[in-house]
Image (cartoon, helix red, strand yellow):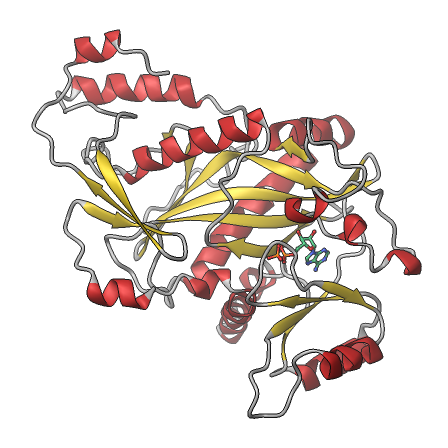
Length: 400
Ligand code: ADP
């Protein structure tokens, strides 16, 4: 990644889909390090209430570096813990355990080797053993966040997302602790379950989940939960704001993994730098295709929206945070996350607004090319185009 930045000169009309040291947010151990540091700084400044708002990650230690600290905590707080390799994804290398001897085995068997040998880094984390269940099954949420800038912080949240369910019913029985079909919600794992239904998949739209929860718990409780999720995301971004190298050519789409427990508390599990854009069902396709289109509209390389500083909504993306601008109204009554996605209607309105300003109009009709590099890095170059469409022409042009 650093190589690309050091050797590729980006012109004004070019954008890259990662920040230089994006891994400060997306590597499991660095995310936790940054969250812990933020919390400690707030405590030091005696901002105890704000510090307590960072209690959205389970007790976590980096191994092997913090093994001693972990053992101390484990003795005070035993039960089920989960080991996750920091450099892997899709549930690979993850296992649950209840006894220290189970990791001593791992220490010997796996990578806990002599100093000269490379050690595989893990995080060890308290397992959330009371997840919120639907139909007896565990799920986690995948939520998309688009960061346009870290200094000042400016991010949009996509209102659609989905819940990823397990195939097997949840249980904390000892003999099932090694059953990944019960405990890990990754689609890459669940699609191999014997009961996997390829026609319907294992995903449920966020909107459906929200409505289901509202019928069970009422609007207030569920809106409060979704507000907490939005605030958790903002705080996670604030915790890396001073660490991530700002570059006006960069933007990044993150995939947040969030677990809800039975007390309706959200927990941040991890942030993915290159969330999967593969579509396994038609509704998955609609969501991801629409989101990518909206992403390019928000990033606005052709500068159609530049006179509108910070639109509150662009397609399915809602402005989540724009630092330096205090919203005096405070929390709106309804969190936008999980709301009905009116992106088509909204884009139609946006076209009209932009058109009245006499600006060139090519929303949703991007001209440019993508260079793909190793490791999911893309550089998008917009063509400089002199032709543009008039309002009339746009009205005649079907959007979809
Ligand atoms: P990966 O990058 O391999 O997907 P995650 O941290 O997202 O790793 O963990 C994979 C899955 O394991 C999650 O989707 C979730 O279902 C489960 N999981 C991870 N950490 C916890 C935890 N602390 N408590 C309960 N379940 C967890």
